[in-house]
Image (cartoon, rainbow, N blue to C red; front, side):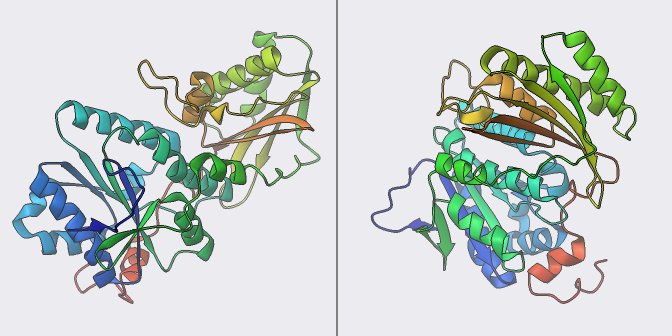
Length: 351
């Protein structure tokens, strides 16, 4: 059993723990008792991991492995806001049934463009707020083979770290809203010189949608994603019209490369009031928690990444939708997963 150290100030009903590992033994030392304790308690037990980790866990659990729901990272970590909403719904459902949701989830970090990496790191932070009343137990393995910046960020977003079978308070943990503010401190890169630009003088949504559609049709954006973009842009522009300050400018461009994207930016001269939460947390029934603004939350559901900057120079909301050929949706390859456990190559018979 993994126990908490004396003096731990973390909420004892909800746990969110970091499991750093540099091989199969370290992975099993933390993951196996976490899953076994959940099975013994009658929890809904979920493991999101690659093939190598699943093989190790099934072998160690024996017949009890049938009580664990195994999921591929590619499916579970497909979209940050949707994953958060689905997992939160599962936690509420488990609570309603008198059970606890217990998730061992290894985020899929590799091959994602930097804005999407930041979105997932932000999710790791805000779930400490979103899940605090659910009683869920979350453990996130992080391989030592990951880039140093990703592992360092994990120490800021997890209240506890598992070491030698014990959960100890993480001295690097940062308040979730402070962490999100840190994410938004770096200025956004300037739009490219050839970005299309439209100044919005009135809320003529028909021509706005026509303009966005015409530009998007020149890219490889699928029709389904175009409909998402139109809803998201309408929400952001309407918000700027109601609460921002003119001039309001819409810009659109495409970003080439290994992770091509269509980018749509809405900028105005207004400044957002502090404490709005930027729609980072799903609205709860009857809830009014900070971060649960429905309009912006819906925008986050519709886009691959949403970047918001606000301050003395005005406010900017930048929406990103991945174009076909983007590499950001997939986790690391199977062979990379085995190397994270200490194998140079997949074990014999596994390819």
